[in-house]
Image 1 (cartoon, one colour):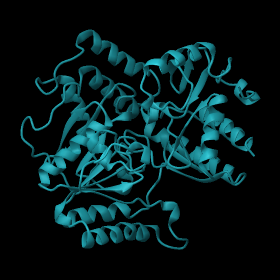
Image 2 (tube, rainbow, N blue to C red; image 1 turned 120 degrees about the horizontal axis):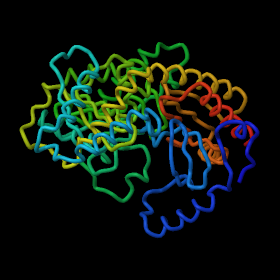
Image 3 (cartoon, rainbow, N blue to C red; image 1 turned 180 degrees about the vertical axis):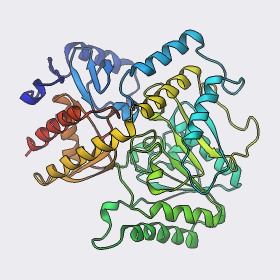
Image 4 (cartoon, one colour; image 1 turned 180 degrees about the horizontal axis):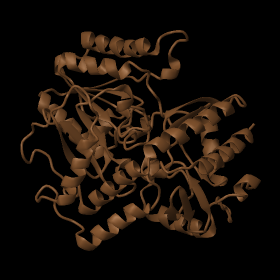
Length: 445
């Protein structure tokens, strides 16, 4: 075990055993004998409990959690309001078949989601279909786009992650390992380049450059390989997640929206990782003033209970009864958790907190980038922060070093660290996180 720093010993981080500890090691041995190797765990961590931004393992070691179950636990681990909502619903009714009956909780959650829809020129109302996960939400959006348009082709972006089921995997293009050995996937999927605003040439207007990045690529494929009248949808994450927390330039999504309108193509925003306050807005696409036709959601919607969904304009949601379905989507417990979670985000001002703490953290890490060449760039919005390192080995070593010092992070893309902590992160916790991460990175010199 790496010697714990004096800083870590002075706060709630508590590492009392080697990692993994004896109980964790025993669990891991049992786990590896029976579970799929496809899971690909990155830490020898066996959590026992969580509260707020903190996780305690089976050996009593306590960690500051900066990835929140991959951007899931928006209101932290076991927020009292979410726990109470789940407990009350579990005592009353655990399951009904969502496609077969009228569940009050399903309706109430859909009302909340419709009320959160991005505003724009379209004012005709929205419809929601609830699922269990992000990949199911993307699958449903893909089916609806093809049904509504009568077209088959779809345009996605290299670096994008949309899930691992067959349809969504056809859109995913963040890592080769996610696709290797699973072909042939869906035909008619074209992948374009997702620009990074950091690459905008010095002295050039970012909005002009961003529009050029979209228009040049779309015009090229429309004229050479992909007739626009055959394209059902363009799908994009507002900020790429698995691809490295890449923020696109201003103008990029506005140009895509214009091109979609021009050619009768639907624009699908995959807000699975970016939604529900993580970037300081309910949906990250709001930062660019762009109103999608379909919005995919999951992760932060419920802070841990499996809930997902996709929301489509009423003018698009024209498929007939029984055209799509799910047994578990929109369960009473899931809907209760999501409704409570959304209320907490709103009532506790967590979107504003995400912006405040995120801006503070990014400012500190930009200062750190001036101290070491190992940190190349800092980007993000709110509490969705990407820290690009000099190489893949640095990113992995930084992640492991932070784990040994009691801070949980994850890598993303080819060589970046991602920070996606609970939106309740306070300044003291942000300070602990930064100091530990700084100490670890500088200690690698």
